[in-house]
Structures are given as C-alpha cells and as structure tokens.
Amino acid sequence: MKRLAFVLALTGSCVLATSLASTPAAALETYQAKIEASDAASQARVDMLEAFGPKILRPGQYVWRDVPASGPERVVISLSDQLAYFYRGDTLVAAATISTGIEGRNTPTGIFSVLDKRPMYRSKKYDNAPMPWMQRIDQYGIALHAGYNPGLPASHGCVRLPTVFAKKLYSVTDLGTPVYIGA
Image (cartoon, rainbow, N blue to C red; front, side, top):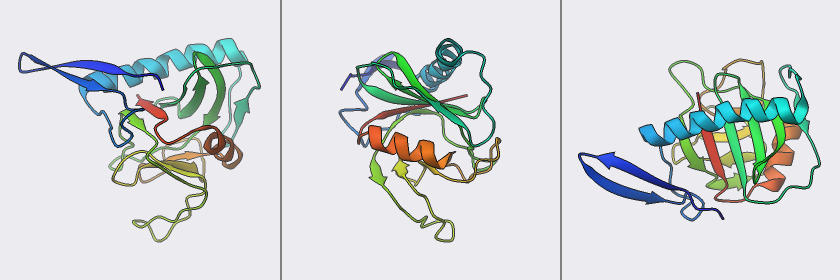
C-alpha cells in the first residue's frame, strides 16, 4: 500500500511518522493530519462535481460508479458536508450521505485506518446497538457502519452509512485502508 509520510515539528525537532497502511494500529490526530484530512475532504467536493455532476444526495442516498480505476483505496469523510467518499487511486468511485457524532460526542478528525471489520457487530458501549458492516477505525470503538441516516449529525461518534453503501464499502476495503476524516 501507498505509504504516507508526515514530518511534524515538535519543539524544534522533526519526528517522522510513517504509513498508516503499514501500521494499522496507528491513528494520526495531529494538527498536520487534521489539515491533510480537511484538504482531502475539500478536494472530494470538487471530485464529486467532476464525477457525478451537480447531484445533491438526500439522506440515505449514495452514488457508485463502475469505472476502471487502480491504486490504493481510501475513504474520505467530510463532516461539514455529511458525506463519505470512496477512492481507488486518484479516482472517486462512490459517495454517500452520512451521519456523524453529535456535539459532545464528536467524530474525531485526522487520518485513521481500518483496524477491524465485522459483517455484524453490536456496540459494547451503547445498549448492544447493532452496527452492521462495521469497520472500526480507532481503539475507542469509533467505526464506519450502516445505520440511521437523517442527514445531520446524530451518532455517538461513529460514521453511519446507508446500508447498501456500507455493505459495498465493506466488500472493497481491507484492514489498513486509510480513512481521512476532515471538517
């Protein structure tokens, strides 16, 4: 998988943090990673217009195109647009409406990777709530999964996806797939 490299300035010294894909247990929630994730979300808005035209998705809707594309997969989440984007290389393949964390239970921003995948999972924190097509991205239980999608933030921090989109996304991602979550 493609390696990501970040040089972070910490008290005048440089620290090199490498590849989320090669170290799936890593999550970068640094200032630099948050900026990169927000830039990815901004670029995804432009790519959406190019790929699908001026389409506006309603809550629970998604678009997915079968296009010849190669390269590493990645997921980009835009909190401000409440949209998820799926890329293969530089090609935007799909986009979907989402529902992220409510205020006080905000969805974290930065660069993450898929750490665990289960076709059906139940929350250990929230009353055994179902989390179909679960892809966990951090050690605290934040995940991408199918769920209620009202078109605005409504979750406890997870990224809820339309069910059919969640299932398709689950089928094309692997452990280590990067997930960029930006404002």
